[in-house]
Length: 438
Image 1 (cartoon, rainbow, N blue to C red):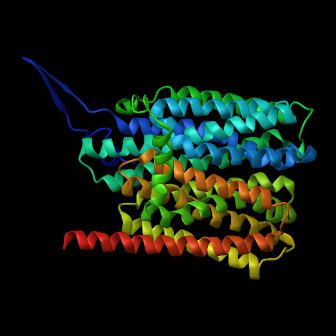
Image 2: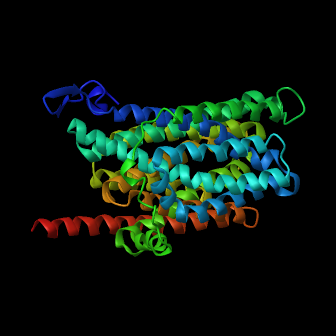
Image 3: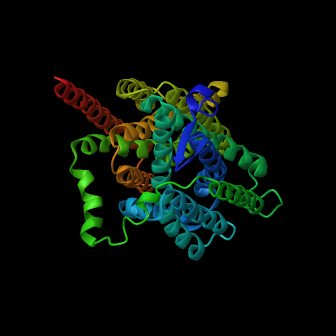
């Protein structure tokens, strides 16, 4: 972001008057917090993302890796239902710091991957992941809104820019993490030697620890919410969970929340195992995921940059949907293993196109929530993670049971429903806005 957008150099001065004295100061640098948050997630998820990609190939004994991931996302789904309440109680900064502990424990458990280490770590990570992601959405949206207000900028543009930066950094984790894996797991070496998984997960643990330390430098927010739940009742808890589901806008966007999870899990569970590995072998998985991550990062930055309101979100989401439906139709009707260079290039091309779509969905959904739901932001992000993580868990459990063609058909149907509901949502909002101004 340039200075004009971020406000780092052009923030207006604020005069604070206290009795007979006055103090001139600049407003809090909210863009700084967005940068710190982006870098913290870069370190944490470079490690976690690569570790997740390796679970089905490294921890293979009795399906320990894939089973652990399925348990993780079921736990994530369950705890996301209550995550908004926890984030309101802790405040978004404390929620972010607490959330890092589950990722640290999960990576540590991979140093000794057994059922009694991996399963409890996966369950706990499901809880902390729900907290960190609701906290992330709440914190970044709050920073963007405050920044727009302090610097007198268009709120939708700032929300889009902040989300574009964050998701650009986040998508880069696929590049960095997979390159680290490629370097330390040379020639398919997966254990025993100094370049085996022990060293790899130790390096990952160090990356995560640095990211967790960065979280501590975020400015505190949500002080006004700290006492919100001191007298919370079961009724209030249930209301915070159920009420958002009764709103038409949430109902219409749920299919897109679900699809965002499906399309992410498709890469982790299907693309690497059933497209990349048969075409270019296990050694090519890291490279293919790096290409996917690079396209995702560039897409996130560009999509965030051009986000300014509902109309731009609609156009960008439509483009991302078109790209992914094109890939799915190609896989269903035209794709086949090819010999030579072409056979090696096609999986990389599929990964790049899919990465562009993922960048679109990540930036635009998060920006859309910030624009449409100015109240109960935590509850909306919690709903997002409930539906997204549930969809991811379904793919992990379905993947061993159905073939690629069946999974592609499921994806096509889900995307058609999602984009239809989303377009109906945009028409509903535009109609409501027109009636309000008449």
